[in-house]
Length: 221
Image (cartoon, rainbow, N blue to C red; front, top):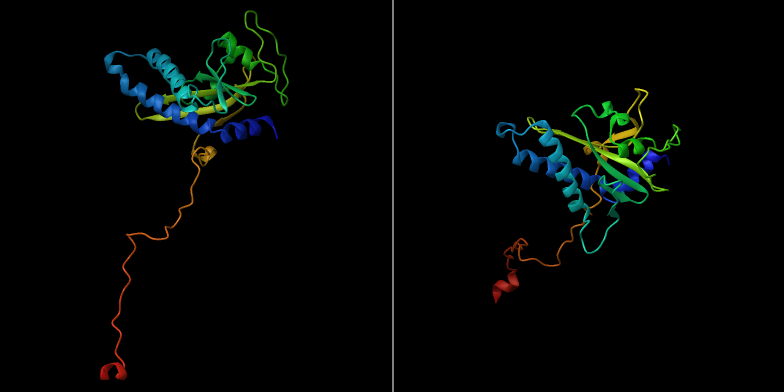
């Protein structure tokens, strides 16, 4: 199985993808509900808030602070918020709505540049060390959860992908996939329970009683 399918299958089975989409929706509603351009908030305000609130919501839906740890743990990279499931770490990146493929990782933070320089088996490239940025964890593949939204009308975009260091002006991703209804399917966190019919219920319909016609013998009595 190639990396894209393995990463998707691993994160989906653990509930990561559905939880991330849930967190993105709740965080977006919280930000848009608490801020407005008429009150003086600008795009920079929305951007910073959406990132911070999404981080908090992801911790919540992943159960980071629960007493019983689940399959998803907090795993920051160089102070950049991250979460790990199996061998996959996921960082956040906000993008302009409709322009997820226009991201320029070579102009991003040092951490995001380092992530975009990771070796990729299907498209090997020179993984240069960036001064001041510690090397990534051996055996860990770092992916990016790219998020965006518009207020009026309310629209959400959420993508999972492997960034590509595109200083050559080429594509921004080795692979990327939208988290939407078509791609996610049924939520593995919500197991379906087969309904069990009760042996007896007070709500059962009354049995229809029919009057039996008496026989000639019974009439004689």
